[in-house]
Image 1 (tube, helix red, strand yellow):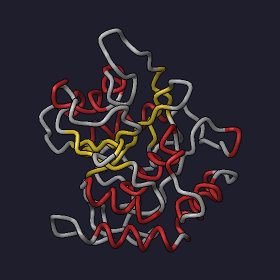
Image 2 (spheres, one colour; image 1 turned 90 degrees about the horizontal axis):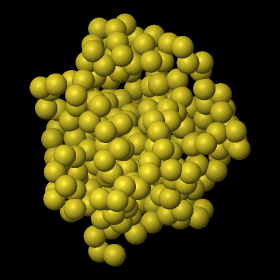
Image 3 (cartoon, one colour; image 1 turned 45 degrees about the horizontal axis):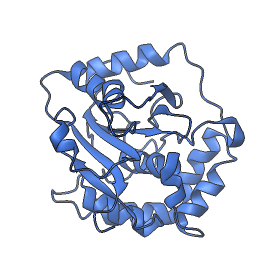
Image 4 (cartoon, one colour; image 1 turned 45 degrees about the vertical axis):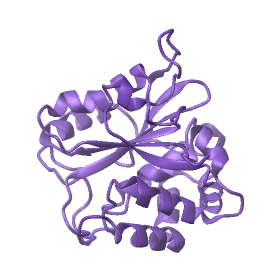
Length: 257
């Protein structure tokens, strides 16, 4: 287990397989997901503000998943470990689990894990094209316990190849796969029963944050509604204070549709 002061979220270099860190670039993320088998009816969108309602109107609604990129600080690590401590390791599989959750064992693969969580759960799951690499991976992963599911991810060459291609094309110079990168992805999705889930491969399992209920002054009770933002990204922002290295990407309908 990482110490409370460690800022890189993954195992040390050489301890596990490693990916080049994925830039929080909606265009690259969209290309990666489409290459793996997500319908072109969906795409990733930059969320430029989570507090300005007018800015949120630029995102097609409902938003099916929200990816938050945030700095892993000593404060965050301390709170994460305190919250995880009383929780047993997750063992759900198949019909036993309310969401499909992947434990991260690949260094610097948190971006890919976030994208997998985004498209494997909630309404987005219905947009995975049949018989594609993504469809085959999800169906193979469902009946497996977390440890075997992680091995499946490690051994899926199509996933590694698509990720490498996308991560190498970012707007900034790509770090090395073994580099220490203190930014991490977490995914928020809403399931059919209204529950907001926090999905992070570093945690002990998926975390239910609360049921979303549509309010009179809101058009949607999706992952960009007031309660979802309050229980998700805003909680992270409040904890980290002045650190500005936060960004959000939403999965929603394509603008061309």
